[in-house]
Image 1 (cartoon, one colour):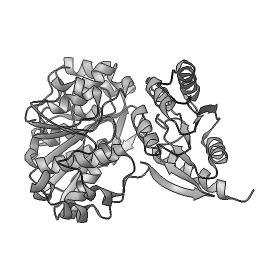
Image 2 (cartoon, rainbow, N blue to C red):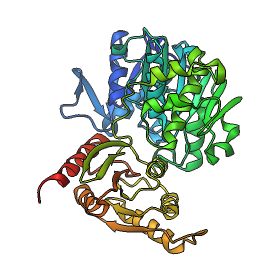
Image 3 (cartoon, rainbow, N blue to C red):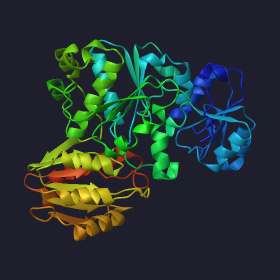
Image 4 (cartoon, rainbow, N blue to C red):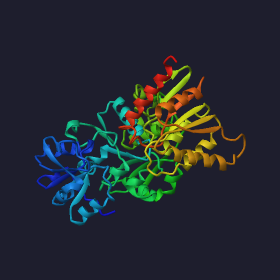
Length: 459
């Protein structure tokens, strides 16, 4: 990847600036530039009807947009636009600085009061726990970044003691500097359509650990993939595993999190706070577990992340719609290790390998019904079926796993309920994005909750 431009928002004052992509980040970028007195060129791959934003014209990328951007000095792109697209390469070759809003913000921030959290999965939970603890300990904190709040949006202000920033693999490629403390919650192939291949994804994701300024990486010590890539994790690593003696304790219980993976996420959050110099979070006897326990109280959790949404005739319905990859789905299954689980999987096909999911299902001893849904449901079913046929159990009974294709979420939910009675779990953990059938993961979660309620309706 070309050298990353080391620019801050203040460097854009008076420059010819283009904004490419007008989603959440693009809207915040536009507001920031307007506050600075700028009049940027606006471009979007798919402009909204009317072709304007805040009364300004918006060009379509393929209809003059790229040419307009090429006449800019700086283009602030939305994270969803891959740095590997040929249009981006063309702009860079023409001398245009292509940057991201988060990278611009970080260049001008007091990075000693910032922690960046990345990882294939678990980063949203980790930043939300870290923010909740900091707030409970009396600090002013902004939880921002990929979780949905751009820290550079003028609407959020800048009067905080700490910033806890979730960084996606897309956003990581925009960072020319890093704060001293970076966390990596997990690693597994993902977003191959954006990055091109798994190793490029790994390198891009972990690049936040090695940019100028990075000192300490707090990393998932239970991840073989991360341990194999120690060289990409910066000068110092604090490995954190489940049950870490310097971090774990009863204080975690007050968060009400399900699953060992979420307990590890909470420990990573504490390790980050300790690295920021928060006294109560210090490791071992130097910390204050009682203060942490009080701060943990009232943690609201994240929508669609292992959240119970209904209980019908003894069957629990659990929404994990945010699961768009194999890793969190396996972790969700582990949270219900000894229980019968009807697992609802499938969605938009990003081409990821479902072999690890199939192997994880084959290792389960509790009965499991896998209900696959479009569009990639048949591919998941094929992977699971093949793994079950080839599986040689290391001892004990053969896997108690059944697989069934379903036409949609409502049918899958009803079938899962009928199978899971009288005391099982219907778990929506799709291991795939929601694109196509739903607007987003929230829309998918709402459809699941509605289907669960329908199971309670009289026949």
